[in-house]
Amino acid sequence: MIKQNRMYNELLNPLYEGCDMNDLCVATYLIGAKKEEEAIIKMASIGIEQTTGSWVDVPEETDEMRAKYCSKTIGIYEVPAFENQTDVDMNVAPGGMRFYVARIGFPVANIDDNIPLLIGSITGNIMSMPYLKLLDIDFPKKFVDKFQGPKFGIEGIRKYLNAYDRPLLNNMIKPCTGYTPEVGAKLFYEAAAGGVDVIKDDELIGGDREFNKLADRVRANMDAAKRAEAVKGEKTLYACNITDEVYRLKENAMTVINNGGNCIMVDVHGVGYTALRMLAEDPEITVPILAHSCFNGAFTCSPYQGMSSKVVNKLVRLSGADIYLTQPPYGKFDNTFDNYIENMIASKAKMYDIKPMLPFVGGGVVPGLVPRFMEDAGNDVLLGVGAGIHAHPMGPQEGAKAFRAAISACTAEETVPLREAAKDCKALEVSIEKWGIYGEDHSKNLYAI
Image (cartoon, rainbow, N blue to C red; front, side, top):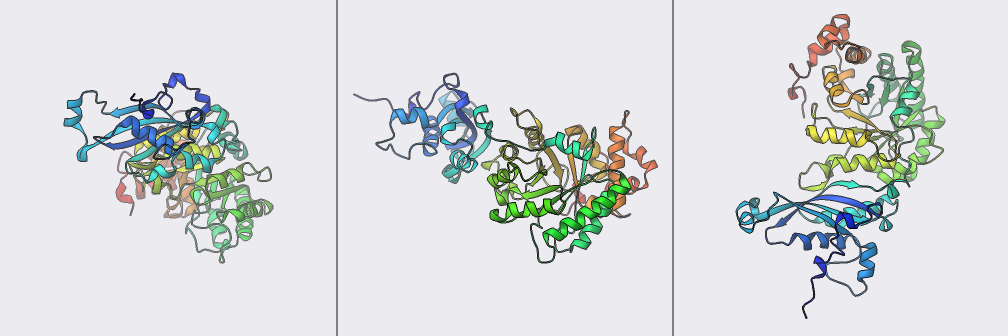
């Protein structure tokens, strides 16, 4: 008697309506297959590889075990959606490839709230295959409820700064590294006094450096923040980069807090999501966390491999970042517009009871881009500016004032065009002369990379 191929069985290929979706983390993949490959077997094999089994059936992997702990292929969608054999012969992609969007559910019981195991399960060994990209993960409430998420989020950051109804302004201290605390504090003061809300270390200076000790850096910059507050009447958050070996992160965070610091920063892909979570959920760490995205592109920018930056945004938010950097399509980098907006949405949209995370846009931001960013994101965005402040011809304080003038023009009851606003602000006028206005003469030619 011929038995049905187990790979075709509804145990591995249930309908969505036949699953308890609160028990599954559902991964959505883009998967390429050769023309002759059977999609159902390929998807089931991927799921088995990442849960209970291997490339061939093993004796103890019973149907009872698969029912509880094996993945479930709940959707396979070929793109284009071939249903006619002659169409497949004529219209497959170059090289004889066919492409599918597949949704595969992984039992929460296999993972719980273990982010390293989540990554090992949903990406893991299969990422060595060509033509496989993780597009999204749908997390059930049962899974998300075990995470705290951002401690402050957008509302908490605004409350600390007493800054509402406008975008927030960030500046990165430049040069990126190699400077002393005294040099950094001088630059910090100038930017803060000009109206910057959040000043961060660059991603390239973290923890103790021989030329710039962590405690010295914090004390110098927080003194500059107090002096700037006396001038502008506003607080400044200092996101001090504590990036380091994981075993030194808590000590670094407490060094910042014990020396008067009010925000910490980590290069999240260097330290890992679970290290970020460790910091965010520690009750002794009572300040917001800014997560920097450096290295993100290594596993997101390929159209056929790795994972999407939407997945990254979700994981960073779950892990507890209050602020996370995403690259816009307008400056130095080449993010697509739709991907950038998806990342904004992943940062701020409702995610059960997890607080919204403030999206932070950076990479060649100039005052002439402020109206465009507000059209995209509204008020809830952190404008990340480096050289657009420090390279201003009138100095960094005037560079910051140019941005605040642009923000005020865009948040006025009746929006004021930037060229009109520049008539009352010399710093903004100079910025526009130097870097232009997006939509008029702003160009990628501004950037060397």
